[in-house]
View 1 (cartoon, one colour):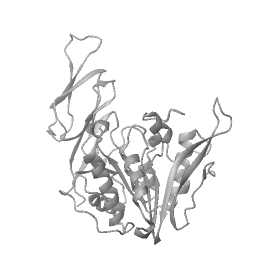
View 2 (cartoon, rainbow, N blue to C red):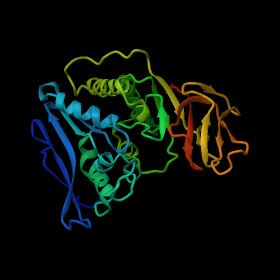
View 3 (cartoon, rainbow, N blue to C red):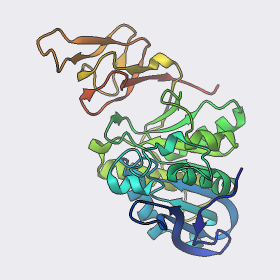
View 4 (cartoon, rainbow, N blue to C red):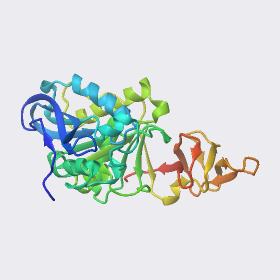
Length: 335
């Protein structure tokens, strides 16, 4: 893999707390020599493992950035056994613009891994993460939410990786988070995910879906902050006190069939028939789509093709053909 173009102002081996930037070279219409700065923090205490935590992979998901900026201010080196590397806004240009994709190159940060050293800015950042940061990490956490497009029941996510021991360790870490649900999911929106690359490298990897933009509030932020800290405590990296007890045990769910992800057959205004958390049987109508062009035509009904709990649902009513309207998941056990 080619050498990175990115310069960092932090020393990953230095004890204590540091804050700095990843300096990503840019050339724009207004500045031939420019730099985009991605904030980074390193907290290193006594010898131990390394946790690598990301927020802001997508620019319309603010739970991660808010929680991680607060966490950097809170953490003290004496409470850390090992090292915690935090990037609260991995896709900082998108966070500043409030867009899911980067406004600088139009790319989805979560579809370009492992990235390219000589690629666009999004690909260059992904390459740095894959080639420089992942090799340092034992534990990788990537905080997501539904942003503007989807509501989620709060959950910790992962792929059904083939290594059974790696999967068991990831489920144990997810249980420590204390979210209501743990979801084993399938990639239906394309490959190149940050979590998928970390899993492929054998890292203990957790993703999340912490609600959506419409659910952004005290409860969701509290669950996110408590969950990150609990996972760090369970890993023995944050040693301030024992993990906090969850209000109720997490339910482990799986959505591994393509038809678990219900796509819009036509464009229009989606009217849902079920609230999240409801059980849907195969053949039941999850909602209907009203035509904007032909308002007095009968709406197009959307049936479920699998059974499952409605774990996510389209947030914005206006949909285009092919948009994901809902996700159904079923109980699962490692056995």
